[in-house]
Amino acid sequence: MTDQTVLQIQNLNKNFGALKATDDVTLDLKKGEIHALIGPNGAGKSTLIKQICGQLSSDSGKVIFNGKDLAGMDVADRAKAGLGRTFQVSSLVMEFSALRNVMLAVQSKLGTSYRFFKNVRGDNNLTEPAMAALKRVNLEERAHIMTAELSHGERRQLEIAMALALDPKAFLLDEPMAGMGPEGSKKLIGFLDELRHEAPILLIEHDMDAVFSLADRISVLVYGRVIATGSVEDIRNNPAVREAYLGSAA
Amino acid sequence: MPNLSRETFLNIIISLGLLVFPFIATAMDEPFYITLATRVAILSLAAVGLNLALGTGGLVSFGHAAFFGIGGYAMGILASHAQTYTPIFTWPFVIEGTNQMLIIWLVAIVMSGIAALFIGLLSLRTSGVYFIMITLAFAQMIYYFMISWPTYGGEDGLSIYVRNQFPGVNTLDPSSFFYICLALMFAGLGLSAMIKNSRFGAALQAARQNEERLAATGIRPFNIKLTAFVISGMITGLAGALMADLNRFVSPTMLSWHMSGEIMVLVILGGVGRLYGPVVGALIFIIFEFIFGGMTEFWQFYLGLVLLGVVLFARGGAIGLLAGKARHD
Image 1 (cartoon, chains in turn blue, green):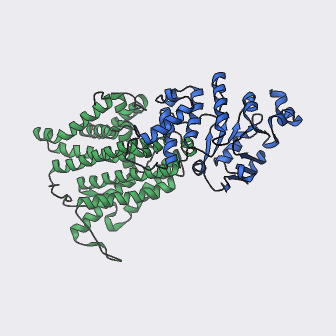
Image 2 (cartoon, one colour):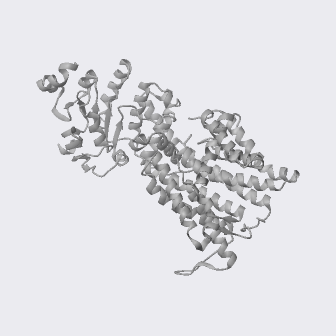
Image 3 (tube, helix red, strand yellow):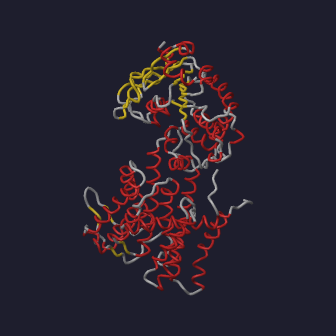
C-alpha cells in the first residue's frame, strides 16, 4: 500500500494568530487516483495547497512526496521534484504568448534556464514539447496569442498546460473549472479522467458534479480540519458532511 | 529582413549616425564633438548594464554608480601604479599596475561583478522600495569609503596623465578612442539583446512579471535575478573604466548617488526595457547638457521637465514616443 502512496500529508498545522487555518490535516494521494478536497469557502483548502507547494511554511507536520520529506525545500525545489500545481486565480506571465509561458515550463523541465545566447524563438527543443502540451488542452490554435488577451477559461487551460509540460509526478489543481463555461468544464472533466493515470491528482473543486463524477476519494475540509475522507457514496451519505457543507450548498 | 519594425529602423539610423559621427565632426572642424559622442557611447554602455537589471528584470537599482565607480577606480588604481612604476602590493605575490586597456577592462569587469554579487546577495532578499534603498545604501558606503581612503586620492581622486593603451590603436586620437568605446557599446547592446531572447532572458522576464509563477514552474527567481544583477553590474563597471579613461581622471563623484540617478535617468528617458533606450537616453542627455548647459547653469532643471514629460506622457520613453509600444510575443 505504501508503494502506491505518492503524496502523504501528516498532521499538518498552520495558524494565523488565533485562527487555525490548517488543523492537524492528514491525507494522502495514491497512484492513479483523483483525490478531491472539498469544503466551504474559507475552509483552508488553498492554504493547504500553499503548504504542500512550499509557498507557506507549516507550523508542524510533514509533507512526504515519493517517500521524501519536503521539509526545507522551497517552491522551485518542490516543483522540480514533481509537484505540478495550478493556481486558484490564474498566475501566468501576462506579456508572454501562451506558447512562451509553456516554453518556460519546458526549459525548467530540461534544467536549461542558464543558457544566455541561443534565441528561444524557433528553438524546437522548447517549442515542440510546449506545443504538444498546448495541444493536449486544446489551446494550440491560441499558442501565439498574448496571455493578457486570452479569455479566463483559456488561461485556466494554459495553467494546466504549464503543469503538464513539467511532466509532474502529482498534480495539485486548485479549482481548475472555476470560471469555465459548461462546455469547457465537460471537456476538462474528460481530460482529467484520463490524466489521473499519468499522475494522481489532488483536486480542489467547487463544481460538485465534477467532483462526484471524477473523484476516487473525497476529503471534506471544514475550519481547517478534515471531517471526513471516503468514497463518493460515503461522503454523500455522511451526516456531518451534509450538515457542514452539502446541506446548504447542494 | 523585409519587414523592419519602426523600432529596428530607428536603431539602425542611430547606429549609422554614431558610426559616421567622427567624419561629420571633423568636417565641421569641431573635434570636441567627438569627445561628446564618446561620452554618449560610454554612458549608453553604463545604461545598457542598468537596463538589463531594470528593464528586463524589473530590478530598480539605485546603486549602479557603485559598479560605474569601481570600474573607474580599477582603471585609476592600475594606471596610477603603472605611471609611478610602483607595485599595487608585494605580498603574498607582486601585482604591478598596467596601462593596457584590455587588462584594465578585465579587472573592471571582474571587480564590479564581485561587488554586484555581494550587493545582490543581500539586497535581492528585498524588493520594491527596500531594494531601491539598499542598493543606494551600498553605493553610498563605497562612495564614503573612497572619500576617506587617502591612498588613492581620497576626495580629490586620481589623475592619469596619459590615456591607456590598446594594441595597435593610437588611443590618444579622439576618433580611435571613440570607436573603441562605440564597439564596446555595440557589444553591450548585442549581449543584452542576446540575453533577452535566450532561455535565461525568458526566465528573467518572467521574474519581473510574475515571480510566483516562475517559482511554481521550478525556476528559483532569486538565482535568476542575482545572475542578471551581476551581469548588469559588470557591463556598467566596464563603462566606468572607459569613462575614467576618457576623462583621465577618477574621483568618488563617479560613485555618488547622483551618478546612479543619472544612469537611471538615461534608461527612463530612452525607454525602460527597450534595446536602444539607453543610447537614446544618453543622446538626449548629452545634447541637452551641450546646448542648454552653454546657456544656463540650470540645464538640469529643463532636463527634469523633459523627464517629467516622458514619465507622464510617454511610458515607453523617447523610443516609445518615436516607435510605438514594445512588441511582445
